[in-house]
Amino acid sequence: MSVGAGPAQEQGQSFFEAVGGHATFDAIVRAFYEGVAADPVLRPMYPEDDMEGAVSRLTLFLEQYWGGPTTYSETRGHPRLRMRHMPFKVNPDARDRWIAHMREAVARQNLAPLHAVTLMDYLERAAHSMVNTFDATEES
Ligand code: HEM
Image (cartoon, rainbow, N blue to C red; front, side, top):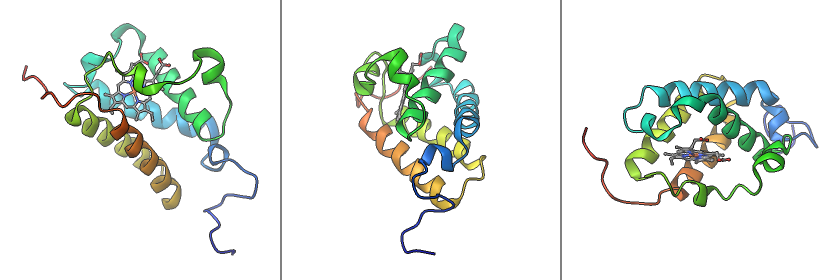
């Protein structure tokens, strides 16, 4: 084995392909949204009547980011994720909840450990960059 070779990732193969392609990203995002649906802080932010749309948008974005099809940009344009999150109150509490649901969803996939760590490292950094307020979550 050569030094620095990733787990089961052949030369020229994208991370998207290496982790199992669409089936894997779809499963992660669906598991993630199950967590969101049960989360009192995150649930109200998402469109109740368009959860399938939300599943599709996040799946397509992640697939494109990791070297899969570029359908996200073809249908949604430039990601501009920070800007697209401005309408939502993304404080550290929301960020930590988002990360926790992702961690749970990724853990369920039984990916190779290095793949799981690589994915979570990106998702955590991206989540930190999405924070747009430090106002506390209101008690309900
Ligand atoms: C930090 C906590 C986060 C919160 C609370 C949050 C919340 C939301 C909400 C409420 C939506 C609208 C759902 C929809 O209709 O599509 C959304 C959309 C989206 N989010 Fe997040 N998000 C977070 C972090 C992230 C991160 C880290 C990423 C990427 C790695 C991401 C990627 C996306 C994408 C791709 C969309 C769809 C954008 C579009 O095309 O309209 N989000 N997010």
